Image (tube, rainbow, N blue to C red; front, side, top):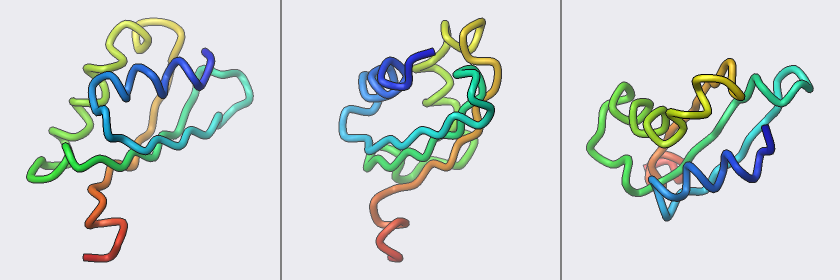
Length: 80
């Protein structure tokens, strides 16, 4: 799957998100995503992951076989 398409889907759900993707296998179906968004504030890790999985619901049924995530708020990245 094209990484730009994945990023776009995530940004539809989290418009302010900064997203970095890494293709873990070179096959474009196993990804590691680092996502930073203010919309993740006040959410548990599980809630954050569910938000991303919901944005990629259709893709997780086929084109994406595995997705690992690092999900942060801007404050967490800044060390606050």
